[in-house]
Image 1: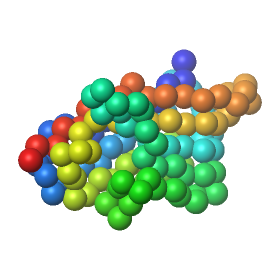
Image 2: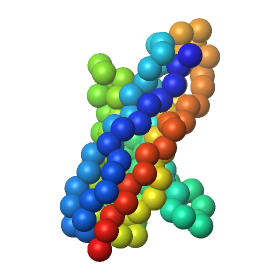
Image 3: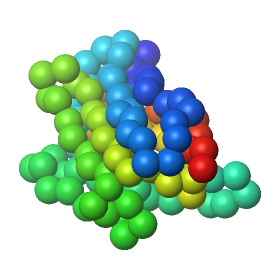
Image 4: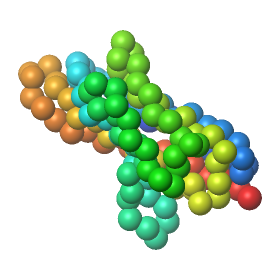
Length: 120
């Protein structure tokens, strides 16, 4: 079964950096629109960054200039590069991907979430 598997979360001090990874496993899945979301305790899930099939990116105002999204098509992996982290970036981060599976069915997948904790 095709799924997204995340890694890279953890505890970091304010000002530090982390890179989150999200890889497609379990079958063929051709990525189109991909993105990262986050959900802080007691808050709604919010969009962090997206990348279109053509590579155009959109970054949320709250992280612009500090975060970047990238994708490795050959490895079917997407990344979220996080720099100059702040305590308010503490959240569970989820990757999201749209694409075509082995049967050419267009689907949306979510990663399991990875916790990022930024200490002050």
